[in-house]
Length: 451
Ligand SMILES: NC(=O)C1=CN([C@@H]2O[C@H](COP(=O)(O)OP(=O)(O)OC[C@H]3O[C@@H](n4cnc5c(N)ncnc54)[C@H](O)[C@@H]3O)[C@@H](O)[C@H]2O)[C@@H](O)CC1
Ligand SMILES: [K+]
Image (cartoon, rainbow, N blue to C red; front, top):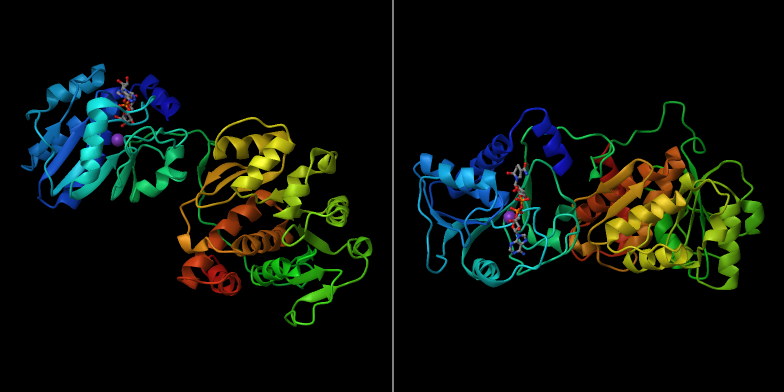
């Protein structure tokens, strides 16, 4: 964001002009929400506060002037200019209630814990009644990390200025923001930056497709076949033409459309037609499980590693492998463990996923209530999925979808990105209190939404 603003300023657009665009863009949203009702603004000492004065003056010009609370005077030249252009008064006394509140205390310049009168004001904002709008980001959130640095208010709306910041897509920050909208201020961004994932388009099978050309997915099962069966149920509905379970166990009750190969694993893995592999759900962590993982990696096919496979994985297993073909789907604990196994020392989910991708070349989907993908095409953030996904087995479903997409086209980053969208959409369709089996079945109508 800073680089894009600097580029715009170097090209002749003043900071004041950017602030005017930000403030007026935000004010247009606020006037619609306030609908003539009273507005109360909180202005901080930096340029976020400057945006606040621009908003306040815009509202005054429309005859809808409200209260402006500003514990400290502006400390930047541009914010001072905005304050001077504001023709109203600064309010004092306790924060009123039943207003549309606009929080412009701190934006991406927040660098330390919010204390004293600023913290008091945020606490009062948290307690008072009314609609609450954060300008750029919630004022107690560090924009790069999402770290909470003071009293966290629950907002109804967050208006991001110019571009999304990382904090807009990580927990717990993102859960406090309410609806999110982006205010365009006419900046250009270089390609290759971390960005919000764009809705994928999923191709139907080619006119001359047959089951192998559409993608043969082989799922390597382990000691607990339930998890790999769930993954298979989802994979069958995610686009692959053929899904096989490679298992040592007998499976009397698998669905008829799922083929079980209970022969020796090494032989089954020799099938040239296998487009992708999945290993991990229900694999177990025994020496035998480790052997199955090594055999699967030695087959040198595009592969999704999940769950137990991530516990067993170490650098020696992938040395010499074409890691661009490997997609991994760790949750928070697995991500931390992988970082330890690969000697990565960094804090925070985004940095960990990026470092693991940079160090190993594998596409890393750091899943959870917030999901971050660090892969061959860069870093991607996602809107939050339904919280009902917090149920046992939903990770197996995600792994199954990912592997099925990988079998279709062989691109690890793309498969993981598509999988997150399909997973969220399936959860939306499944509604409330669903089981993982129900979720796996909802993948079929979910896929139809992206054709
Ligand atoms: N730089 C630009 O070109 C533009 C910036 N814009 C706005 O400017 C914001 C960033 O402005 P700034 O970089 O001035 O920073 P902020 O306005 O976010 O706040 C930084 C100011 O607060 C102080 N501060 C930081 N942490 C504090 C704490 N815990 N307690 C008390 N004081 C603290 C800093 O010393 C500094 O004076 C953006 O979020 C956006 O709202 C927009 O107006 C668009 C143009
Ligand atoms: K703010």
